[in-house]
Image (cartoon, rainbow, N blue to C red; front, side):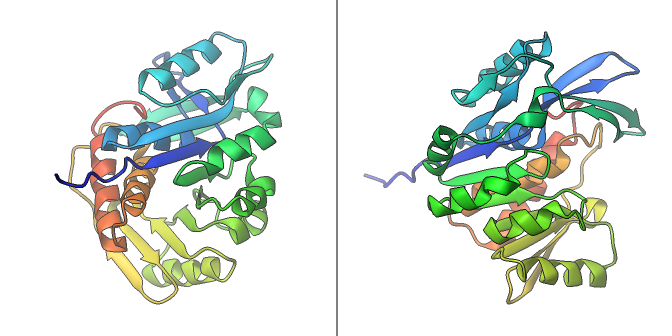
Length: 267
């Protein structure tokens, strides 16, 4: 009988938001860790999402949409107030963010119960807007493997608090080849074992402290760039949870991203 590999279990924690396209009136559920959880399901893994939504109309809609994708929402809380909203415009297929209203996410913090639940997964992923940075050390104390999306905030002071407790750090970096490599080296000096920079049409670069890895893109027709970076992270982390090497993870991230680029909204 062929040995079956266990299904990778990813825990996503932090921000969620409704991506509202003001010109068209369309609204799509999203948020960095939420997106990574949904894309992990698409890849064949299992995922949960821990966070908070409001008591407005968007709250039940967000919860139902995430659950409908098969994501465990047992640790998604509802609190009085508004669900977070990002206002978005689409300019030649590229999403341009406007105002961001955090709503109830502003005061989100991981509880002790949340931390225990998250640490029971194979890997935990969060990001800069999830208000998890100050408590990542508690996850590491529980033995969790932690991934963190820093987006394009390369010099954000919150990184100094988070990075010492992060295993895999992800960034969006549009600088030169030399600038990207130099930056990834500074990131690893702060604690992570692996740092990855996505570079849009120029693909991605990863650094593990010993060598740099580069990967291009999977050509596709771009409809909407919303969620493309999160898709890369999901594909990469899914590969890591399955024991794949860095080049294979980068390839899977690029493939996952190309799928998301082909439709409107994150998912």
